[in-house]
Length: 77
Image (cartoon, rainbow, N blue to C red):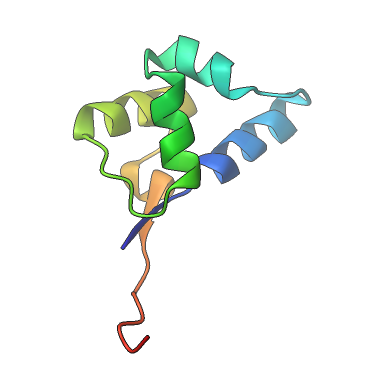
């Protein structure tokens, strides 16, 4: 399963800039709808297109690997 690290990137940006970075600000700066950002942040395995990944990487100045990680799923449950 793909896990998005959006909350961590927002927290890192807020810490570096010593201010609160609301999701609405990220939405406005990237052109990604706030509902989509909320889905990325809160729904494990959200299906997001590469255009959104591109916009978020541009905003945070990061690589896709900084934005998302692969997490092995436990299929024994």
